[in-house]
Amino acid sequence: MQVREAMTRDVLVARPDQSIQDAAQMMADIDAGVVPVGDRDRLVGMITDRDIAVRAVARGKGPDAKIADVMTADVKYCFEDDDVNDVLENLGDQQIRRLPVVNRDKRLVGILSLGDIAVTSSDGAAASALSHISRPGGAHSQTGGARG
Image 1 (cartoon, rainbow, N blue to C red):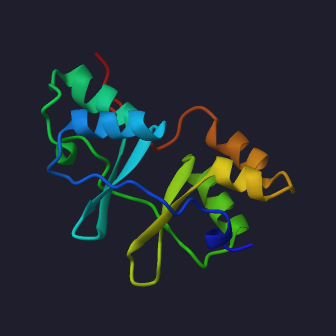
Image 2 (tube, rainbow, N blue to C red):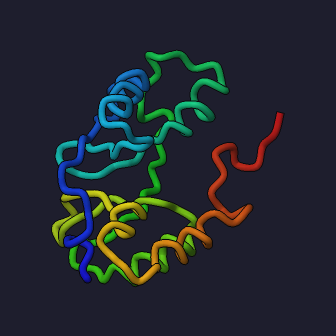
Image 3 (cartoon, one colour):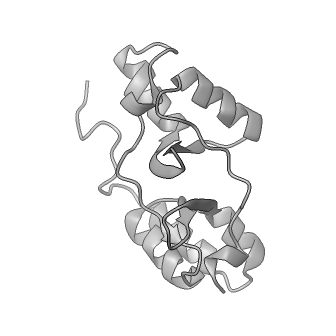
């Protein structure tokens, strides 16, 4: 199965110059913990509820802080014509639960989550990926290993 068959197509996109309060409101409106960040139809980052909590609030930034200041700019993505099983393996290896989906012109066309895959696939592959994603540790630290 290709990614386009499982992904969510209707994706709300934030701009880097919007406030983190705007991002939080978007997340509340769509009942999600992540919003892609785009600039002139190009994907430039992702902002999560965790980014807001750890990179903004925990560091004393207020609701008017810009998304660009706290988003993850090193965005992993997949292509709409990728094989879902290949993407699942990457999700597990990178310990992430969702990826933006782009077309071959690198324009955002959707988002793929473990939930999308679980609903469209019956082979248990999403559960296997989740077991890899949920393991402790990994390279993805919000604070860069800093404590205190």
